Image (spheres, rainbow, N blue to C red):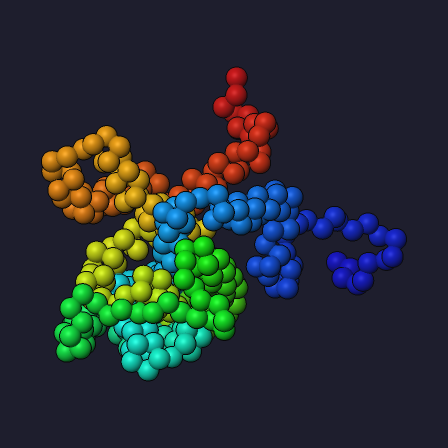
Length: 368
């Protein structure tokens, strides 16, 4: 076959916006390079921009909580969904960020632009400690090792809070960036969503790099990954380091936003909520993490609204948190039974349906 350069007059196939032939063409900044994506990107940016100016303070607060949860879900999905490693210590890692913030900001008076990188560094160290058992442990045994670390960190938080005489948590002042103080929900809204965009772009591009492809190979076929020369142990620990670093930074942001660091906030129930986010949204998917975080974060507020709207009393209102936890479990079970790939797969089916409509691709054998 002739493999030389084509003549100037030769016919070239038109370049498709969906097919990429190099990494530079596949950068996340070029993710919106089709008419469908560009249109919805512009609509999304418009809605996100005007939302804080038309919504009340309560709705903006919910949107801020969704942004924080989305960053935490992205970090956990990177570890569990993309690298295939189970972590049950997510809540404790978030708490580590909160107490790092309490120590740095309250005790030493450090600004937020110093505290956040410090929290990420602390997260990298914790990720190294949590990832070392992954060299010998897998699946449920690895999850139990991270659960043990969860309770160790929770004990450390409680002791620090008790010895410092912080009965109801450590109060944290509103952060200041230059001359700008994050003092209201609107300012926090724009700051948090810019941080969410940065985290999402970072993880998206990371998954397209060598470590990201190595994690996916290890998740799919660990033995095959070893055969082709991937250092499985190194990339497992690296996954913990990167994921935990982001998680601790998110915990720092959460402590700044709520103005408090308390050990009561970071029980195992919080880990279960984040696991629900990535399972319901879709394991190994950036969009799935965002969808799952949106649904699971919004669910308690919607439930409270219906309880108040219908004036429900009795067991449901008295044991609201227990009902909420049970509802999380029911949702997870339903998705595992009905759609194991999560909300993102439902979205793909809807999107493909409208992209192909009105054409019918049924097999000719099934047509009469």
